[in-house]
Length: 119
Image: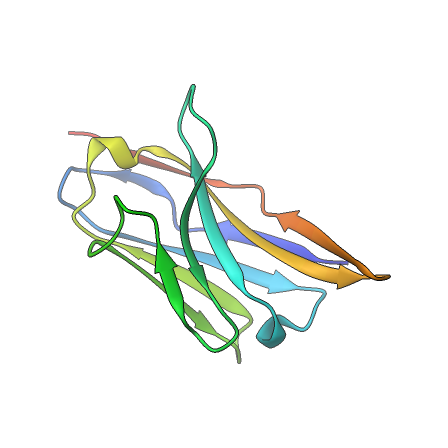
């Protein structure tokens, strides 16, 4: 079955960096786009970054120039390098993909990893 397992979250000071990882299994990783979302308390889940099969990347407006999404198809892992972190980046970060199963594009989510930016 499809599994997405995030890691790498934690507490970091403003201006610091973190790298999140999402280990994927149960599907042909190299043939699917991958995404990172985040959800802060009291707010809706928002798209942070996406990476296509061809490694074309897109970012939310507030993340551009600070975050970098990448993928390693040999390791079935997608990464999110987060730099110049701000308190507003505090959220639970989720890995996401959509996999074709029985003719239906089915979304999958990881359990999330908490990122807290605070002094």
